[in-house]
Length: 101
Image (cartoon, rainbow, N blue to C red; front, side):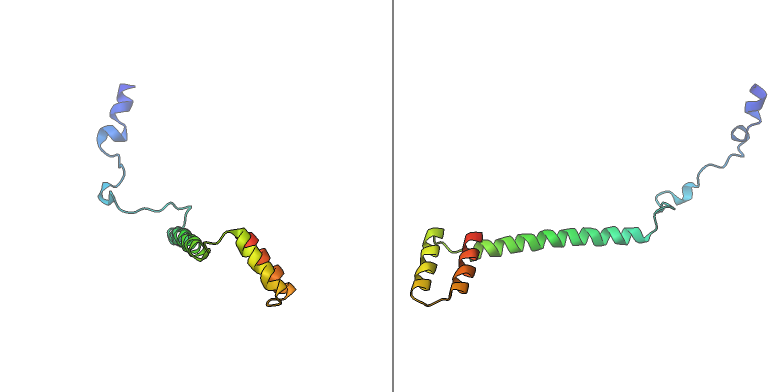
């Protein structure tokens, strides 16, 4: 047994370990193509863009919202319909938008 250990490649210095000259060099998993790095970068950019667009849309909608209460807006629409300023179709559309917020 002792003789087997002395004649092993590790004991005689013939063993070749990993090439440390490339330590820190970028390596790729052979099952994951290098293009996946680009794909994940694009996915990250799209996620960030979606978040930014959502924030901008919410901010614009909040800025557009009038300060009048809903009841006042609905009463104004009813008044415009009664005076003939807007049609039934316009009244229904505007009322639906007002109720949606």
